Length: 457
Image 1 (tube, rainbow, N blue to C red):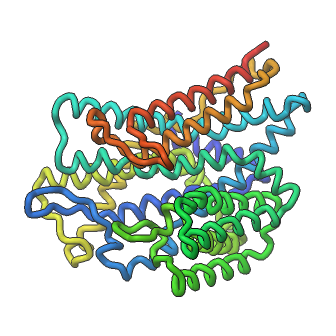
Image 2: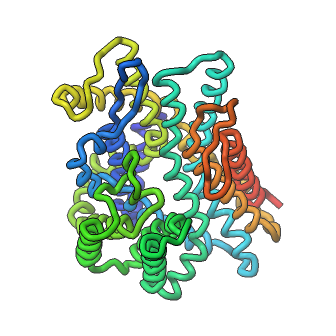
Image 3: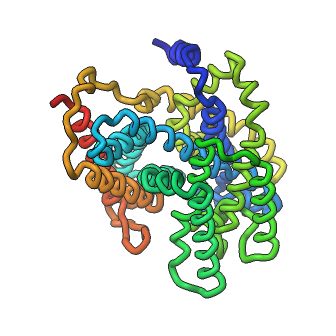
């Protein structure tokens, strides 16, 4: 069956209760990230022929204000919170053994949420890892290829953070159900305190706590959305925008909401309270637009396009940098001059580069899209056996290994495999083989526990 027929059939059987706007936000946020990366990347060659990848926003700082719209990852994490709340509650309702609910639901929840995310990710890691090994064994590399081995893994940071959100969903959902807006407020207050300790009191290493507090606060907004409690999104948008503007104008925060080369303070790594405010304004803004856009999504052709895009969005996200660097590789191989970033010639060439990257991404999606489809469920799943007493903790260990493995790989990349190239992840030096091993071990553990739970007695 072709992909278009599948999308048409899925669109035709969409239940009336499905929140189509959430599906659109998921696709639009990933698409905006892809477009932003294609726009910001500036590949140049020096006088010695060395290939360098710069950032357009560093060359043209006036354009950094665009990140207040293009840094849209908070919307994806907000959508994740909404989806995770619905998924976990649905699995909890289906649980028939109340005494073992935590042990049975948590592994099933992790496997269900991680399968579509990690299957294409593991294929991506496998392909690039094998390519890196073969290149080093053959003595190849150099130029843009070395840059690619270092850069293509960088977007995996997003998957690592998302894995943490999946892992923390059950306890944070319980806090939400008990305290509502108070649980969200506690995370916001914690993020603010971290920045006070960091910038006012110079407490070392405390800033890394905001990898949790900032992104989990945005994720918590998704829980509130699932319960219909974001009733005045214009207030959220206004408060967030005003807060971000004031913090950037009078605080130690840079204008850009993405990391800039060489900057002393980044709003992204680790996240700052200014980035949290930015996330609040984005979430409020997209919620404010929900009504008219939802009516637009009722058009059959529009909804079919959203369904089709959702089926390939993660694959496209994983491979879009590979496609972009592939386009630059072709240009270099053909001796096409690469103009200096932000010049007239650079802007004139930009639409052609983006179009070529889109075509190459489509080719890669065609090759790897099947791995984004969830594995078929066993017809004997209804006869599941009682889960083991340690299935919950084992599943938590699995997702933790995946989380640190993916984050480590995003930092170290695929280059220098045999030279022991490493990066500092929290307090541990991580190499690419170590990161891959953690990811594979964690994913296997979650898969095995999930399958054991669903196997027949």
